[in-house]
Length: 361
Image 1 (cartoon, rainbow, N blue to C red):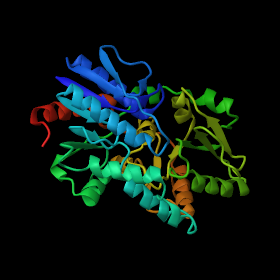
Image 2: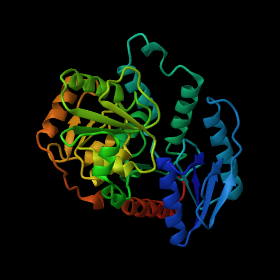
Image 3: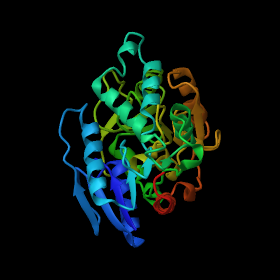
């Protein structure tokens, strides 16, 4: 079967790019003729044909130019099945890994200062993405949609009326064994963390969306009380006004060491379709604090694997949850088969093979 994937560009570190690379590798191993439509791609898997997309223009124009270039290539080549990881209008199957942009803007307004709310979503970039999103979720253009959480599935049905029976839940997956191989003692020693200190971990970029400012405010309380609690932040940048008990570790190729060094994973986003970092933390045996606006929280059993907060802005509830897990230290085994990457890829391949048979509506 001739299968094409659409993704703007690939790097060696991006989560969606790593997912796409593993999916392409699995498709090749399954005997499929695999094509990739992208601007560029680092480390393209063997036996995958790259169809370069020329995408120019400003930040606001680029999503539209990408969709146009992909559509032109699809029309010319006539692949049997097209899977898009971008908001486009030429696919058989769309993987909604980025969630629903309309919902993200609603959440951003909801949790922003009052004076900023009227201006959110007014720029040309957001208008273009919203227009592309409407086309992507038009059931006459897209035959099947893959989602990584029931939260996103329900948002798509509610916002666009896309038929629920054509939406398929395939949860994210990670290489679970990697996150069980971290070096706890050496990493804590390198960071100057004492054995008696309780360590929280946050991993990610886009810090406002993912709730880091609220988490840092809670760390200020611990610091003021001289309570031995520290936070490691893995990601690019620094947050102004952070207290000394927040360690900014930067980016790393050995994130498993930070999961090993930590005692609790804290990730309170205002909107996250399904955060891979939650699956990484669970694979490492860490309890997780997240929010109802993170689709990855659906795999947690509250009180056993973590806590799900109803309000990302409630610092008191976040502090209480931290203290609750601090009182019962230790790693928590999680059924890793449910979050394994091989399972994710196998389920995706089955949907693509089904879509190639049924074709577009």
